[in-house]
Amino acid sequence: MRNRDLAGEYRATMPVATATPDPPDPQDITELVGQHTALIRSGAGMRGICPFCGSSAFHCRPAHNTYHCYGCGDGGGPHMFTTKIDRP
Ligand SMILES: [Zn+2]
Image 1 (cartoon, rainbow, N blue to C red):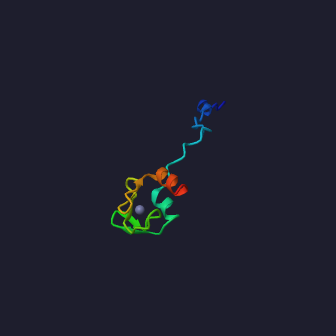
Image 2 (image 1 turned 135 degrees about the vertical axis):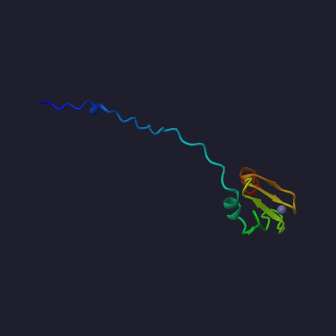
Image 3 (image 1 turned 90 degrees about the vertical axis):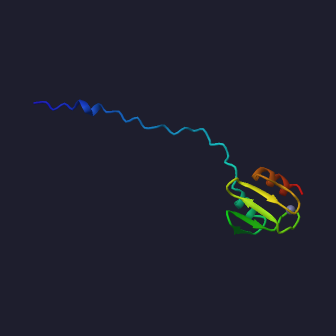
């Protein structure tokens, strides 16, 4: 009596991990700004002292991943912030 299991030929098709690196995620604005100025939670956003002009009307909007300062009118995303903070 032979007990040949045909189902033994089951091939597992595991998804092969691609070696393609993920594109760099845009940095979290609050995390980025938080390295330069203290932020406190304010409603849906964060606020703090503007690292550019020193105004306390500096806001971060995590939902949009942007910052805006009502003092100097500066604003933008993480890339803009990095560019500005690196080159005063
Ligand atoms: Zn400012």
